[in-house]
Length: 198
Image 1 (cartoon, one colour):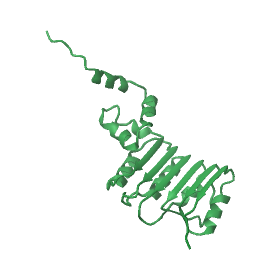
Image 2 (cartoon, one colour; image 1 turned 90 degrees about the vertical axis):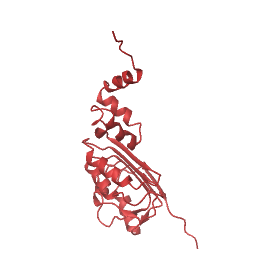
Image 3 (cartoon, one colour; image 1 turned 135 degrees about the vertical axis):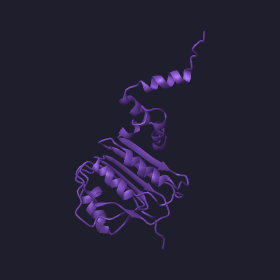
């Protein structure tokens, strides 16, 4: 007569799989995006959980040629009706293959409240779609480094209360003025300009 062997790892995994979706999502929120997406291989139950995350942080400081493809694929598969918080940070060694315009537009269409873009790559400054500067749900916006702030059209950010602009490039001084005047409830502003010598 064979004895059934107790395997604590399998037992622990089964217990985690039995947790409700909202608790599993809370666990995944603690992980980097790559690790959260990787959980889909654990079981059929986990395959769809990460796709309902309402907060995602894509952070890559390594020399990863596939980072842009990873972000594109992840957002294609993302099914949550809301994307409340999106953070995208790329290091100086990352290739310029991340379509930040598409990312920003998707976030705006999903009711984003917090948006952070930090682009340290060596490519030309990247501009954002008009939808970013007319987003009525955006509360917190932080833009850093290789970003072109181009607000050459009427902007409207009625909910924006925090704005940080660090070492970005402005199309012209009017772009900054329009951005600030479009934010009637702005409570906190942080502006850091490039140092100039001469």
